[in-house]
Image 1: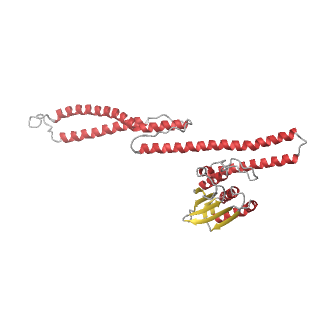
Image 2 (image 1 turned 90 degrees about the horizontal axis):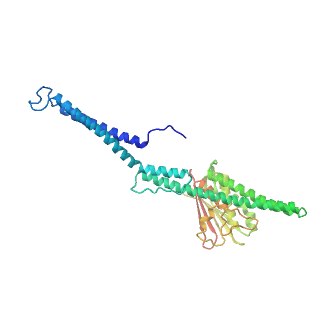
Image 3 (image 1 turned 30 degrees about the vertical axis):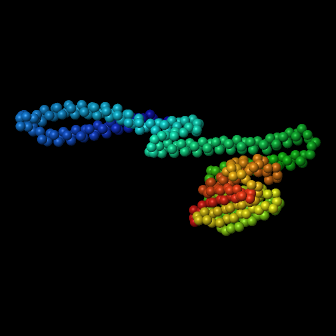
Length: 360
């Protein structure tokens, strides 16, 4: 937004310093003037015929006072300009850093030296903001690149299937249609997951009272056929765990965790345990499953978009899109909660979600 040009802050501070110095000098001279003239007689001979009278003293003091005031004004302007420059030098650094960041370069840091003061605190806060902004932009760019890659794959497969159908009209059309439907379903699922992730990141959803234990039972009932198909024992334990938020998003969070625990499990004879409880002023959801051992350094990456544990792509009918735990993390963050992932020594993963209950 364009504004009318005005005086710089340095010039304003300079005028303020000089004005304060001139006013202080004038007050001091006034006090001296009044104090001295009180004891000087207004007679032609002066005091005892030796000292000058008031008329001569007034003219002598007035010229000296005028010279002093001119000196104070010049000294105040020069000194004020210098001091204002020294005081505003850190602000100039911050302004240059902000201008650099505005041009698109977020890697620049001020790293102001010196002792802690208001400017140093502002500089450190600005550096922290740039660091978080750079990380967020890099994450968004990486997410966009991965999403483009994931969406391009089903579209490319669909194009290939259509080309095959066009070039070989005698081929079994039912098989092509079935494969095309599978690819299209996967693309739709990916698009819906991306929209859900975007919605949870924005946090623009109505809030209501939610009991995580009821959501756990609903998710378990929905996924029980999948667990039985894979030979997985699914148990829901615990009691009420109330929080405040979006019931739809929290149900998706629980469903994603339970489905992830079922799919990423041992081939047969595995277990998934879902436990809910109230701990302090928070509702706690804990999902624990058996499975292969996970390297500790791999666990922090599981909540990143398009990460699928130790495998990039699954080949079964429940092939994931790598957004399950990323959506969980986004929903938990939107509800001001915490998500903790811990590998089990015997294999598998223990996921703990803590969501605050503002009304507890």
